[in-house]
Length: 134
Image (tube, rainbow, N blue to C red; front, side, top):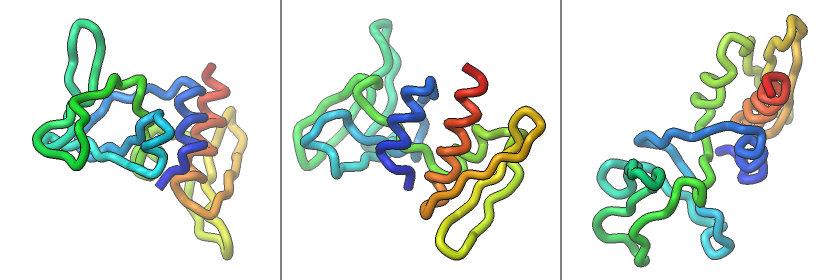
């Protein structure tokens, strides 16, 4: 799973989130640091209002929380979502002895990003790609 630090960096780089079933997120509150939530039509669903988008908590949960504003949630994209966002720049994912290496092509040149977690290697590559677009 992508690290919180890289998820924050992606959000700060301009990555926007349109919640869909199966997406994971954390809340930007210290008391929820260890909690990861999953969007699901059964329990947590995105709702659109004229005032903005929220994540609504349905049914029974172990604590009382009705909804949170989307901007108070931190998206934790899956590996496949990160790879999809790399689009045509993605070349490969390799398992090296101690790390995963993601290779992308940016501005005609190959770039490699390494991390022990594959999702974080994808996130590093996407951060570079987003910095070139901005």
